[in-house]
Length: 300
Length: 327
Image 1: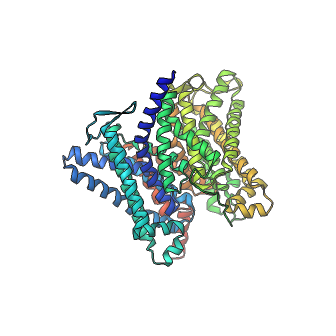
Image 2: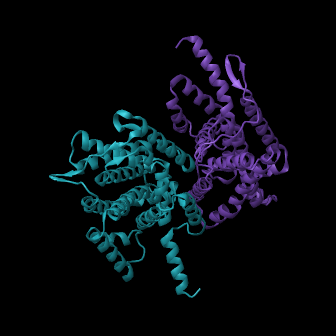
Image 3: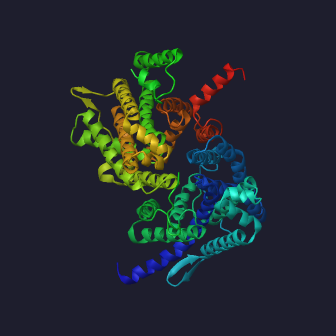
């Protein structure tokens, strides 16, 4: 491969990587805020993302509803579903079993239920595409070709992340969530309603997943299995350090770029393997991730 | 038969009661007499359930006894299937040796994963093993020259000396025998010094270390043994199956086995065996309603975690006890 081509590939890889990476970053953010406050890796995050995509598809394409109803309705549905799952299911699981394994298995159960429900409706059987709300004309940035849709995806994702950080750092609710993440008992002592806070966080993570779904759906084929994209988000979260919010975002962009580079420079068949290798390599070399800080030793 | 070791799984717990012995005897008789009065499909399912029992025993060693979350057991199982089938076909190794070879290869890979896993716990371990499982499935599907890739691999019939196994019925006694053998092996491991150190590590690594247990070694050995047993289950699969496809060795299978162990009750051998049989039958019945399969599957996982986290048998036991005490 000559240098000229390699440079074009490099630019294209970074541009495309930033676009898909922004979606992985959103999903990773959704996973990490839950993990930080509940210590549960939510294995159903991909299916929440998938189901939200189908809710939007159903309302927009099959019910012909205007988009200004579809968007809030989808976000609300995702919020309620996740908040209720936390309140109804996980509170009960946490009450009857102490071990982490049980909570994880409950989220695996949720992922199966959601996937089954979408398949049951019949919508998940045929691959579909969500119509793009932004024109897909391409523009050149440097030597990389991206579409207006790509720019809209990237811009929206970054705006959502910024809004989220503002909420986390400057609002009372956001601070309460951070307090719960650091020390639930102490947070409770200073007047944080733990149960409400957990519901809010799970609901919020549902909203972020739904946004990710709305952004990426026009670019991919929607199937009931599209939730498997969450693997890239898990990889992003691990690269970033799993309990670090900025880490999740940086990790998302890294995974997006690596994935595109692997596709361009190595082979498109190897793309599927990239996230797993990334996870394994990071966990072996630096288990705490890039932003994970020092490893702490667990006391008895 | 398996009856006596089965019951005294948790050391120091109550002895076998009369009804339990009777129940186990009935199960044993039915299991042995099965081929006499049933036909192909039932025998096939019985074979499959016995394989899943062994696979669950493997997962039990690592999750139930040692408390290490592994989500890679479909991969170890797959390694066992491919390794034993290829040894059988390529070198014409007598089948028992091919099975041992499969278990050995899976066990070595398990030791390697265990060594990597030393640096991680809980969620990180779950994710790393999950990633390994997915990567292995990719290898099965893409290493064309060895696994025949996405077309799947034909498994040659197993041979024991002059006897060639060509049907499920012929395979059944062997599958049953190997299953009982592995139950015996697992019980022996569980009761040995090693098994006690597994449980010590599960309860508290720090306390285990204080008692002089080599925690690192124990964790690696647990992974290796568990993977070897899962690999052996893969060899058993090759006794009656003639074909393996990489699609059937992914996350779905890992979740299936995990569900079985959970439904039976994490931490007990009897639970792992019972869960494999009960949930194996449930998932077989659900095949009739594929549209609802995933929903019911997921609902079972969620409901068990909510209301019966100690498993089906403990749940039933508790209800019976409550009824007896008139509550």
